Length: 437
Image (cartoon, rainbow, N blue to C red; front, side, top):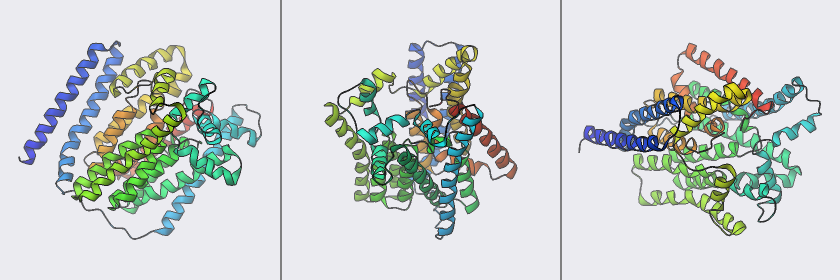
């Protein structure tokens, strides 16, 4: 079968499947006009990404993707990146303190640090200190839904530091700085030094970058995911999949790292022993399920807690766009903090991510776009999504896409300035404790 026919068959079959799924959703959906319009726009943008991706995918699996660069080792550059990321993490911590002072909070700096136990941070620190509980208050029992990778890292460092909050902030800072170095190395496989630095810049000024400073799993997950993909690109599949397993032990969506690894394996025509490495990645999540079993007697207890405590199920991402749009409209009249702190940023992150990918998909490596598609569908499809900016902040493919789309200095300047403004607005909402999750 020739390539043109294969491409048409994939597009027609995919289009039919997506249309059928959307039609079934429409039958059971109960939204107003705005909700349906948002859903249609969301599915249309996702469809555009997928259609534009198909020829890139086929070209990759035929082995026609461009050969990666082999840049010389740049130790000094990586060292500067490490300390730049570390410095930015510290600036975020200090900036939050200054904003709180401006907002009228009267507290010492040590008292202020307790602010960082807001959102999910408290749960991670509780687990690091006490592990998962099999009996007690429901608020503590449901902490089983938070995966153990990050709490274990905090607990280990706390042996030296002796303060769980400081240990959490330190783990996040060091992982964020390490992620910056690995991200640069990954970007340099395909990009010039200047373009790679642009990708790093867009990570540093992304609206939700402050979550990497918080004592939560984002920084560790980003480091592990980047390490997995980088080693995969270098053909080191066994250590890559070990890191993938650790990512899946840190956040459940780490399993999706199967996608970019599979795409790289297919494009490189690797041997059976390399394909077997894929089996390692799910072991990280399997270990988490085993912990569920030891704590509660049910390997999938986390699913029950997610459903009963948070109303969280696997859903369809355009359904998320529909209900969030309706909440956006109602909050504009009733709850301004929710409008600017919750629903507007969530919708901007989802639609913005898709829009970026529509423009950049032809420029990106197939395995990266495949990773984005799978990750977006799963994370944005959550039936009660409050954290789209945070979830998409770790999707490093978006920063690579922005670097490729901003070779023009004017476009680069405008986009970077806009991102800084969005960061500051969203960060202020977070510090003011609007509904930023």
